[in-house]
Length: 166
View 1 (tube, one colour):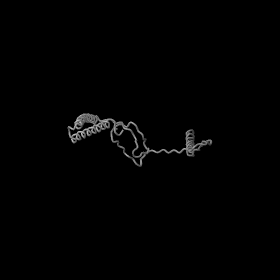
View 2 (tube, one colour; view 1 turned 180 degrees about the vertical axis):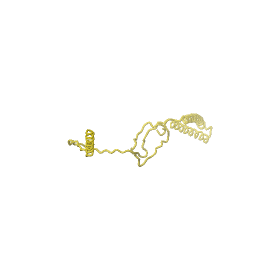
View 3 (cartoon, rainbow, N blue to C red; view 1 turned 90 degrees about the vertical axis):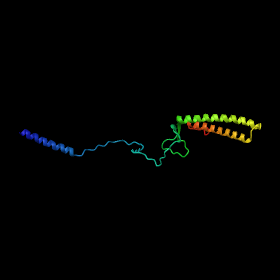
View 4 (cartoon, rainbow, N blue to C red; view 1 turned 30 degrees about the horizontal axis):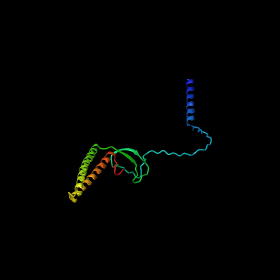
């Protein structure tokens, strides 16, 4: 019975000592460094999304794949600056139509050239009137212009650049 009381007393004393040790503030320890000369770096980490003041949507006049980019995001541009190169992928329906237009214009130009040459000789020999010759001459010029326009259109459909503007 005495041993039980002594054991109980020791347990109570040990509990008070344990709680007393826990309630005391911990001793702060500091690390000591030697002084060195360095640059001060200030860093800021920010999360979120950057919103531009002015955002402009760019729509090319023709469809295709961007093959080269000349300006990076955030660079300033002015009107007329080339910002990218587009590789044109021709639409087969438009390409076929442009090719057939060139063929028709070529046939018409060939026919009007032969009519012009024949009527020029007739006019020089005074077989036909000047008015008839001028009609044939005008048709010849119109057909040549139509051939040039059809060729430019075909070039535009294929590459995105006309031969007259290159």
